[in-house]
View (cartoon, rainbow, N blue to C red):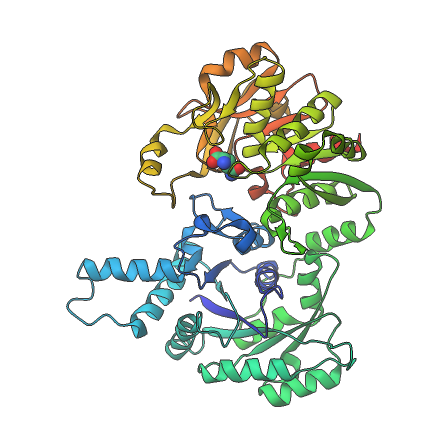
Length: 538
Ligand code: GLN
């Protein structure tokens, strides 16, 4: 019988509910249990594919091709498991399936109502996930903050599930405790009021994770215990940390795993966080820095620089750095500055390597192409991901193959030399303005070319990596590119699509049509990122 742990957030968003959920997952896994994790996003969007990354952060992609919230990436990284579409719920997804069922007469003439039918659909999905993964634990993170209108139906689902299976459900509230500067004291009132709101939804938290800049002291734990009606030992400190990977260890120091098992009368099968402890030690001991530049455009919101759009890339860089026991120092570079003044390119000289990540649309394109040219000519290690790969092909075609009008049809629909062009099947959908889910999504296999660099790096014949794009390298230019030294290093065998390019006369110049960052794990860094960091160190 699976156990269900619902995790909700109090006071404000952005306090690390996703990482807390992922950390709880890691702890339970280390005790010998099968764990899966689900994310509920209260948006009407059916998936995250139609959300601008500046608004919502990175769009993560699962093996089975779902575009979802970045927290799914956190779960995969902490749990070291591949998740699938069943693990991601949005309001839109739930309503869509209830409406489809209604159309199919599934409800047999009954009035279909918001309650109970919507929460029931949520419960059904959690149970399906338990079944699919044969999970001992299903962690369900409810997005948003308690008290807001949008996630009420999901709290209702949690309440109903508890009513049906009181011995199999546990509630955790992750709440924030501010320390206002003028008062100089950690305040518990916002958490008391968040708990009150949860209570009025019929839910009493079993455990409260107190997020703050510093650990909670005894008087604070006492207060929360009294006013939130919860045992003091179930108030857990969750202070700010230098690295998110410390969090499972911090939680375990407060005995969180044991408390969860106790509630369900379970005993640990083992206690194995050794690898994780080694990782954290490496992170803490690393001194030498590697400077990696990311040339992108999705990091401006007003006066703030947000890097959430590139979270899996950041984590993949970190994993590779930890492997070599060095510290990553990432520099964010707005591609548009190279369009304004090419002198700005000299800034790239200070860096050990450059990544050009994925992206959409015209803004910043020419600046990225300038940066790629500079990396190619100055022999700076370079990894181009998806759009980054496509632009490296355009740059090479223009400046090495002398095809001056080379471009992508995404950038110039009528260009004379579309070295990057539409995936034909998607063409018709776009013409009908059917954008949602029209990309080439999810994991596809890729056969590595025998004498390529990447084959040595992966040390495999065939790999599987995740995709999210509409455009592809146009095969009619391959011969010209290869003649001049850009090698097609990997091909999708089913559709003969060029998935990897490399330049061999260069310390490291690789472009991938797929997103290797989605499959990097803290204890299993991705081979391409590992090689990039290795070459950066050289
Ligand atoms: N915009 C490009 C395409 O759709 C690249 C997408 C990406 O970088 N994820 O093909």
